[in-house]
Length: 327
Image: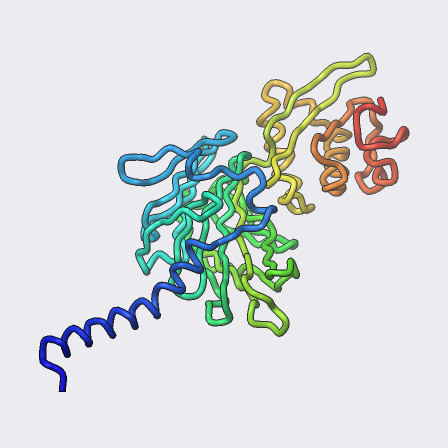
């Protein structure tokens, strides 16, 4: 029989080993070994490129949008611009874990359930909240509670995207069509469910043939365009617009009204130049994404023609071609 002191030490050692076995693998794999795909990291802002505030939060401004990332999962992510402010509670909020920096340089929380969530700010001011799912034991539902301006609503769009509209009916931002992929890059079925001001992403990662890890995201944005301007040529004028990466992804037909409204705002005193002809050309360019990227040019002298009718000429009837070099 072991002496009482040795017995106590043995029990403590067993408890520590069991605790490490239960926590360390999930902690290490989910938080410190997260490897996000290029479609997420492209144009992304790393933690070392952000300002660290006194309360430990991280802050950066891109394209007129200020993003605050929390140091604790119990705190919310904040996305603010002159048009609106959105606070987002992450899936791991109730577990109160601390933010870690992944090997790629992004703020990541271990959800302690077989998944980890990384908040990735893009240089166009959009924010991808990416969940890395490591095994079939992880949940299939990931919940994001949103704190919106009074009177704002979430609205599901036909392409699976979700738009945010203010009390005045104006566009305030939205979430692009959800996506999820496994370790081989194979698409995994996913969708959004709206519950009031709560957005839930369902990821069917337990389907047969799925290889882990699975990556899934809500991609939130507010700015559809980086800039818009007018140039003048002998034949008239051109309305030029440079969409953000998020704006290009958020470009289905049900979003076109929001695209027109933002371009009018960015054009300022030239907003009247968004004529019926220019708008139809814009719709044609939006329908042509990604072939029409990364700059749209709409010419004042084009006849008013339904966007679909212009498509065979790549939105530049009658010369053809996406670019303005055809004029």
